[in-house]
Image (cartoon, rainbow, N blue to C red; front, side, top):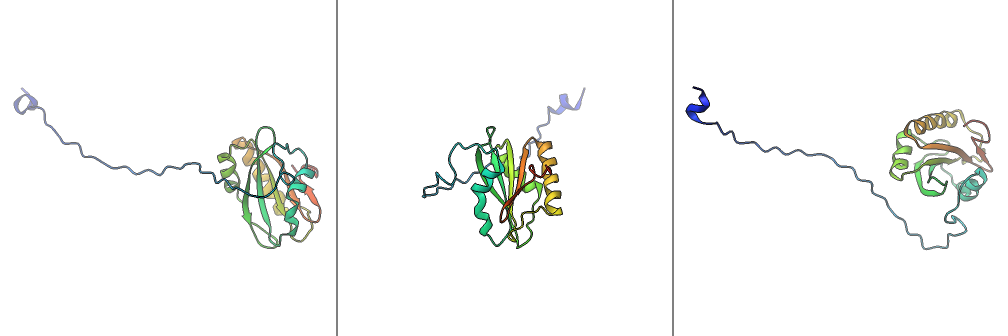
Amino acid sequence: MTVETLFGQEQVPAKTRTIKLKQIRAVYETLTIKEELNRYLPPFTRYNSPEQVFTTFGYLRQETKEYFLAIHLDGKNRICCVDEVSVGSLNQSIVHPREVFKTALLSSAAAIILVHNHPTGDPTPSREDIEITRRLRETGDVIGVRVLDHIIIGDSYASFVSLGLL
């Protein structure tokens, strides 16, 4: 004879519990620009040279602060997104791999081109520019988003690929 046969199966009421989880959703913001931009950013253009990037983003020469952009490219090297990663001061901007690749993954970029300006006009890469490019390339290699080039815009431009730094 057991306790169950004497008293029946004991019914224990289930206590309901609420679990709260945070859910992250990819949200894109589509900007509608009502200007004639076909000459500035022609659709379906493949970017395969630093000169093209300099021509497209040469407006950064007039900026008085340092802007760091990540140009997201699809599998055919066409721009699918432009991300303003950081706006800094006269001679520096803070860039972290997490911020660069967070949006690159959300936009499903196959590759990125890094672009930033030197308000002083001298496009020569600094030691910090070389170091952050190395870190970004390594991070991109790990997650599968290639860093194709890093272009510094000043009075002219400097391409890390052309300089043999990437």
